[in-house]
Image (cartoon, rainbow over the protein chains, first blue to last red):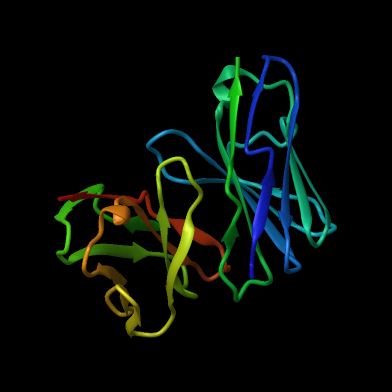
Length: 115
Length: 109
């Protein structure tokens, strides 16, 4: 149980285009989903926290107009990187939890390369 | 501020035992997690401690001392596949996860 999927697993896009990444909890309902970014050889960096049906809470320094997060249902959250640039190339990982007393379950990650 | 410290890198020999330490200073405490992350992959959950003491799960054990703000992850009978980064994360008083930078564990034959 507690499986989280992400799609796509990797994507290459051109500078200036937008990319949407989906995160799904397959066998549980996630009241909260998290989006992380990880650059090579660095630790996880939390980008935003989203609760189903409400606006995401972004961490300091993360542009909410650039990284659009939608958490429309208890099993799906999406991250859209708008007007992507090469510096946005990174490993994006989502995680989900049932409620605050449970651990976070991670998706397999999406590797984004912007050319 | 909130802070989690763990060694950047450790090396151990296949078949041996290694202990990865984690110290933390957070605003409140609601549990400590250890995750394993292989290169290019997402983290996977290893253990959770909220009370003082040792939690054993197969070859892996995790210890917590809340009064000392200290935890360790103990890996026994090391295998080559244990080469990975090990992330310590603390859930603070607001139930936010604060992440350590991770310890890269290198296993040598």
